[in-house]
Amino acid sequence: MPLNPQRFLDDLHRLRSFGASGDGKGVVRQAYSDADIAARKWLAGRMKEAGLTPHFDPMGNVFGLSGEQSLLVGSHSDSQPEGGWLDGALGVIAGLEIARAAMEDGGPSISCVSFQDEEGRFGVLTGSDIWSGKLTLQEADGFTDTNGNTLAEMRQLLADLAGDFLPLRRFTGFLELHIEQGPYLEETGLGLGIVTDIVGIRDMRIIFEGRQNHAGTTPMNLRRDAFQALSAFSIALNSRFSNVVTPATVWTIGHVNLHPNAPSVVPGRVEFSMQWRDAEADRLQRMAAIIEETAKETAADHGVALAMGPVMGIEPAAMDARFQAELASAAEALAPGTWQKMPSGALHDAANMAAVMPTGMLFVPSIGGISHAFDEDTKEDDLRLGLKVLDRAAGALAE
Image (cartoon, rainbow, N blue to C red):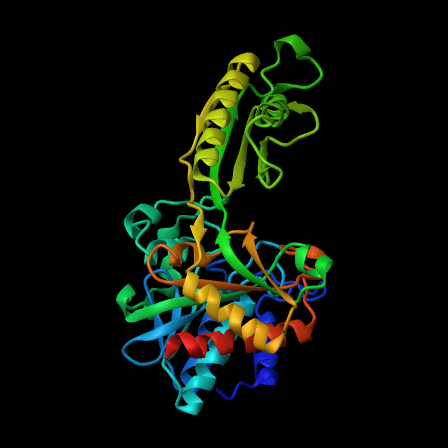
């Protein structure tokens, strides 16, 4: 297929302009933001110019369709609140270029996609979660972001473009190109990582409700301080996890909303995110039990009320053996001896796709192992190599 790597890079930089942060190559393009909607409309236009048929579904997932049945290649184009220019976007534009080249060359049918809300403004991999059938649209519509906006409200911003959900049987499999988002490939000098499996993830919100009071006149022993409860919870959790986790297990309290967040007021309420990741479903469940037990004990010890939201997440997902083999064959042909099979510690739409169709995933290095930050970057030679390897594998898998 006549790939055009320069056209691929030009489109990748053009996508970066939607929500450009002004700080290096960073982007601010959260799901359903003005920048995200503008980017999706631009992508649909590029798909149409390529001879593909653009299709928006009720979530705002945008597809570029080729033929009645095809291989699907893509990722997501929404970003973190302070995001990098390649996270997801690389896979979307790679999918567009590979599908476009196949169309131009009269090759096999290859379609492309940009999934919506992979970064979790409302859930976890929300767009592919719903399309894959793991979650119903009715359930997800009640989800809220950190500002109280519901998914149902935000979906209306794309309602005039939305058609029906596409049947999964329309696609023979899914491929995703992504930056590693970690340091391994760069540190080892390898240029490519063929993903064997994706770790499972769990995510929930927890609230400690204490008593807001005067910071100067409330004795320490009479305080029901929500922040002190959070601090004690975090310390206790680290200790209790020690006999359960492995060196590859990770957990994060990444978002904290303290009320009233004033220097002279004892905090009366804290809402925070709790996320944990591991490759074994059983370990994830044991960690969930420890989190619940620790939160209850902390609330009782500090005299605060406890509210725990639903646990959401994705199960550990293995990549398809045939798709791994084709990616390995393509990597060895184009970059002999410079690739490695490896797991993914980050969550991707490929995890949802693996539950409903054969799926494969390819990594290229992240400079400094940095992602979810404005200075996220990858060398252009690595981007081009990733595109070529994915294209070679896609051609073999789509035949």
